[in-house]
Image 1 (cartoon, helix red, strand yellow):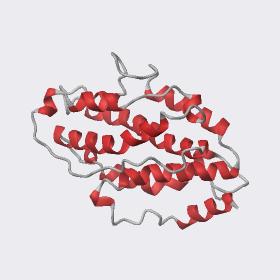
Image 2: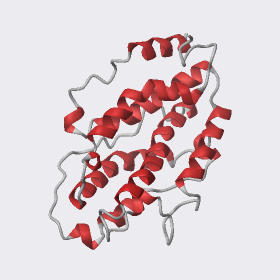
Image 3: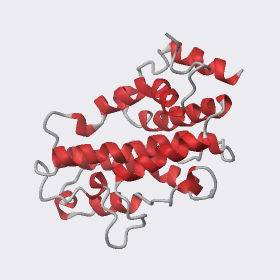
Length: 225
């Protein structure tokens, strides 16, 4: 059976899933909202982690108008995070978050394929947020959980498309734009780097070998050759 990354069966989505699966699973298990019964304290920490990760990526992506930035309208998600953090149900707490995010922008600024990979992680995180929203909206009420719901109403900067339909549009556009072997490999680089920036913010994940999937790494090397 051929590897999902083999040149005989190229698909950017399959390649991205294979290249980032261990990272994705690690983040899913380590984020504050992974607790069996998360609290508003956990949601605040979740938002602070995402903000430290997402803010520099949003500033970087806003500089471009090709690749994923041409295919979909830019969505500024930081206003949702800021609105959620300002909600009275969170502001009454005195939680602190002392991890400083990587404020540098990725070095591959001119590479559209790399940005497709980074956006795969960002768009996927918003889609995953809607799953968390359905699970937590009653548990954490009356907080509106705007960021998890993807609520772009009011004066938020968004395209008005819910995360689910937007994800489908994103995948279709990515598959049209990223199909050459080297572009797929570069998209995988961008996705891994985006995951790694978030993992670096979570102390519990910093001693885990996230490059253990040698089969996927070998296949990606073949794509670049």
